[in-house]
Amino acid sequence: MSASKAIARIALFAALIVVLGMVTIPLPGGVPITAQTLGVMLAGTVLGPRRGPLAVLLVLVLAALGLPVLAGGRGGLGVFVGPTAGYLLGWIAGVIVIGLISRSARVSWWRTAVGVVVGGIVVVYLFGIPVQALVLGMDPGAAAVSTLVFLPGDLLKAVAATVLTLALKRAYPPAFDDSLRLEPATHDARSAA
Image 1 (cartoon, rainbow, N blue to C red):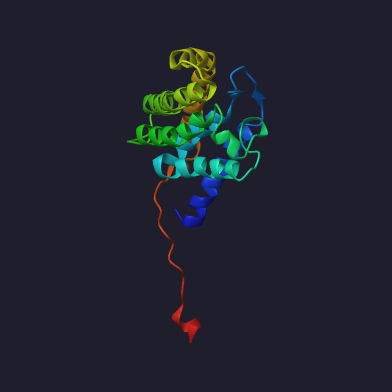
Image 2 (cartoon, rainbow, N blue to C red):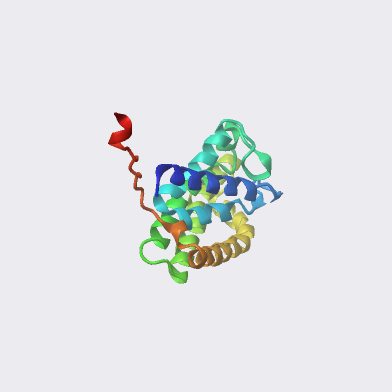
């Protein structure tokens, strides 16, 4: 795959993550329900452990620059010190784990599902819950209990990510091409003379 195609795929998944965050359901505690994590899960399964994090990092850089790319149109440096900061940072680690597990061999439903649940839920929660507890002055156990409201939706997103990944793999296998081969420039010595 050429470098320009790789960059386009990274940008496409960054845009998908942003679009999936536009509709939110606000909850007490400052962490809204959104489909944005579905985009993160798909970035991991489709782009893999090398390019998936770049799509997430692009979204986070745009947010840091103040663009309204996060859930509910949020952006700016304040989101990185708020109750969702740990979850956002967890996206980076989570997408790497998703890519490593789901792309470790031939794409299969169980490997994809395990990767999405471990990376997209467990890892993200491991980053998010402690930061949420710290920022809100909560007991970590109470913060963990407060996140249980998100678990059913996150499990549904994991199922959706698994189904969509497998459907894309069947419909368009080149979407999973991880190779980065720079296409040689065509140069005709006769035209240079």
